[in-house]
Length: 157
Image 1: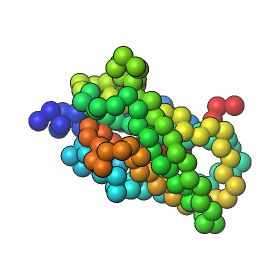
Image 2 (image 1 turned 90 degrees about the vertical axis):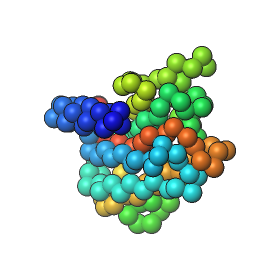
Image 3 (image 1 turned 60 degrees about the horizontal axis):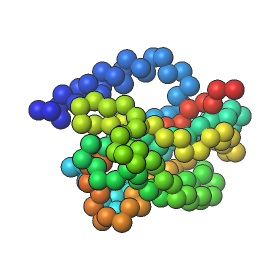
Image 4 (image 1 turned 90 degrees about the horizontal axis):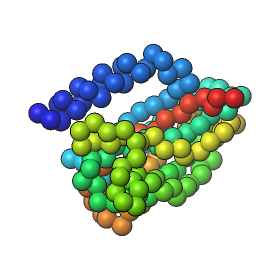
């Protein structure tokens, strides 16, 4: 029941902020089954980029429960451009202070954080860019991760 209430509230929030979010080019979340992210579970995002002139910012969105055991999250992010060029990054997401206070906004026991990943990016080619994200923590099954998202927005200049 709590899960249904949470999903409903997140949908209402998403719909209410959608109309005033004019910089957003792309945003998608992937659900982590049973809030347990297996290290072999690769999350795949396909972003259709048509604007090769504007400057963009990329964000990793993380939703976790208060039961998440760590204050950070290591990710491996692979980006494949339309011409097949591959760039791989290791990226650390700080989720909480050293004293355990979660960053981001919270609703109940779920915390939502938008983390800057790449800033001031100009895409060289138009077409489909594929982003693949895997968790890089030492746990084979990382517990209490609800969703991982990718957001692309036009940078304010």
